[in-house]
Image (cartoon, rainbow, N blue to C red; front, side, top):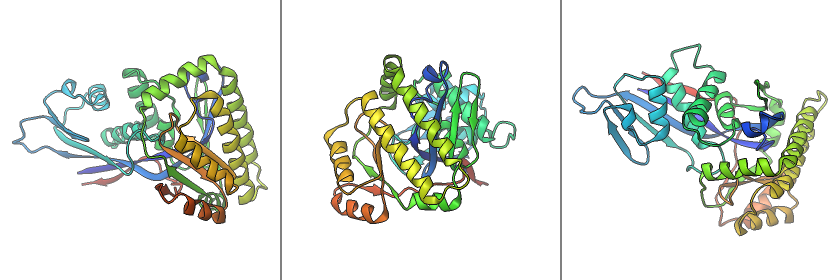
Length: 329
């Protein structure tokens, strides 16, 4: 029995510049954190009396003799790519539903990569896990999208990720423990109550990249300025928090010009956040679905939560570990 978990993420600034359609032409970068909301995958050898060779349980259960018979695109592609032969019963579950703008689909791919190559040291490090997940999703399956989700899920912590046509640079954890705690006490995620198709959102983002490249350049400049400010040694936790909150607020203004207009629920949540004096806010993802990130003092968050009693609220914690093997029996 093997069990792997891989974290979802919250990105604070830079989203969109992690798309190869952008960073193959201009530098891109994202400041993001892995959070304590996970995707899990597991495997166990099939019984010798099982008629199939591979079984995979997710929203449904597929039992097949050949990799190519899987309907689930990632399972089919990753088993074929790795030429997986062992007869296994695979499955997955998650803390949150799919399509919520927190990188859950890529967290699943990273977790499955870890499950399958965990005993190969030269393949199971965070860098290679992220690369393998990107190869499966973006190259073999040709799914549109960025590259931040795979890296954040593989590495964990709160880091900056710089993307270029030639390389990806991953920073060490960018905040002190005190600054992380200060930030955690001042951020919530408000569930809008619907999901979206990540591929539809990604295709719309790629179209917008070609049409509104100047907005992404502004987004990258905001990212660069934010990361440079966070690296100032003399910063206090409140300085670091305010820097991130300012970037989230400024990034949201840019994103409103970049993507489609959010729905009335998102508008209402953000209106209330502004009313209580929140320092920053943004929709995680696009298409009016998923979670709204709000940054504010604990007192203002408490006031806001009393105004949002009809919404589910999560207080995300930043986790230092990325994708990891929990059980190997």
